[in-house]
Length: 427
Ligand code: SDX
Image (cartoon, rainbow, N blue to C red; front, side, top):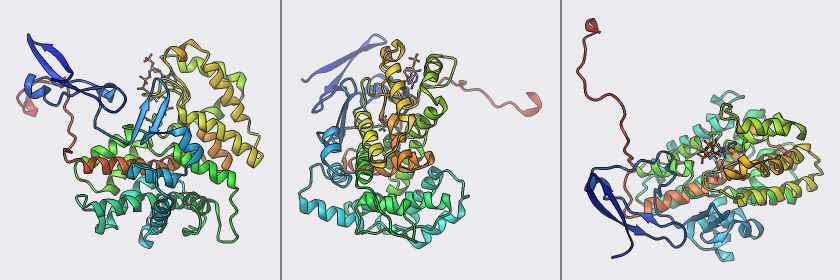
């Protein structure tokens, strides 16, 4: 008999198997708990709950480790590309050169949008938040690809995954162009995945678009840093939506909606807005005190993490990338100095040290994106663009699991017990 966990409740004893992964905490398999004991577990926010088995991404929050299929994020950010990391997440191994070239070519062949889908943008107000546009347009993809929504067919799953990865840059760039009243640019597949996106976003039909190699490299690295992150809120949303058999386009639209929240993917926009609100380093102590004040809803955006109780390894790469982009673009933005000073002060304050609140991936990303020329409203759109490969990889992993079933949590009910209806003239 393997390792067992014992539970005593109402004078009865129960035993449940303890399962081990390849690395990380063991889990208590409580799938039979309710059947044997009539008890539920209670874990709002899932702080102690493993919702699934996965081989994609491993995070050690205490040590600040992030692995994609076993490869450390720092090495992937240094040596890989977003297309290669996408292949790795989807297929489990780093590709050969031929495999990478074939994958990149396949993705490039799905970058265009149906002309009717481009009409959808016309229905939005010009000042619509681009994340609202992303939710609508990505969800609408379901209405265009009936030939690839049979999720039981691996071929359909593959082409839907490729379409989503390929079309997100075109959809994101069009959302930006619509907001600023410029014409959409069609993809140019002679460019890299990231170069294509940057041209569709910042290029204009009237002249050639020159992209600084250091900026292209920085953007590609930012996409790598955002590609996947275990069972975060938006990935869990995609998995739960997918568990009902919903088509992948609808599931990814659900993930985009969840990512938009300021506690999750919306934090990069909120973090830069916060840094601008703070302004100069002399104002930092006031904001640190506000962040510590239980009666003040203000939090240091870009700080803290459900899993990382150490420095988010992505933030380390992001901070280094700020300097590279600033040097390349000859930017001297004081907001970076404010961010560095804020980090220094916060990490020497007992409140943040005791609660293990460190900068996360969102703390520095906005500074880079702003220097490159993106408005803050586009920051979470870029997060969604990059996270799409993680969402589809997690979705594929779930759908391919022969034991997969619809996700249906229970509850601790605290409402009124049964009572009889009272006629309105008796109330
Ligand atoms: C992302 O899950 C993922 O992997 C997400 C992500 C991904 O790649 O998918 O990594 C991307 O979402 C990164 C996180 C971006 N969000 C922010 O930067 C928003 C600011 N951070 C907080 O909202 C918060 O830290 C969370 C939401 C990130 C985590 O919240 P938890 O795990 O629910 O922790 P908590 O809110 O219970 O905080 C623990 C304590 C609390 O104090 P006490 O009630 O124990 O006294 O720390 C405090 C919080 O008040 N706290 C903060 C704080 N974050 C937590 N206090 C001040 N400033 C902060 N930023």
